[in-house]
Length: 216
Image 1 (cartoon, rainbow, N blue to C red):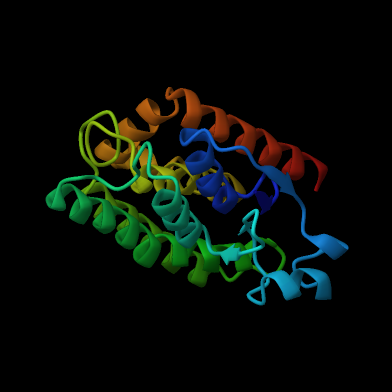
Image 2 (spheres, helix red, strand yellow):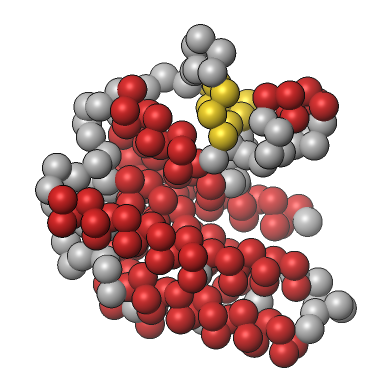
């Protein structure tokens, strides 16, 4: 399998965690043509974003959550979907709450990165929305070894890289760690980083992001 991605992408890190947990071999490479907007890459993924998984039979799958679902269905061991219906509901609540109420605010904040053109009122409003989204997500995260309970699930693949993105966003805007105010999320982050697979992907992604920011 080929994965079109870059190491510094937290969204690619989601897929890389799933691949690593399942012990699947893959080749990671940047988008052909040198850009996600190149004609070569758009022929593979018309959405024009990373990551994309291309299977050995040539099937191209876009969007990190969709890729994880495919991997879990195609390679079901170990499973990333909890067996219990209540745990599956908790998993979906974690993912959807973060994606609907925290990620959009961070995405809009990235449009305010340049201090010279930054709208202070807009930044303050987005930071409030972001913190609110984290607090909402916090209520669904279990006080357990993993996000949902005693087994790693799709929620872990998505949540841990998202918390790394929170750290990067906070650093850009000179903020204290916003996750620290959320007891379940901060406790989860500390435990998840000690996991051999999740911790390795966190470290690789964080180092690549740091190198990119240092060279900016």
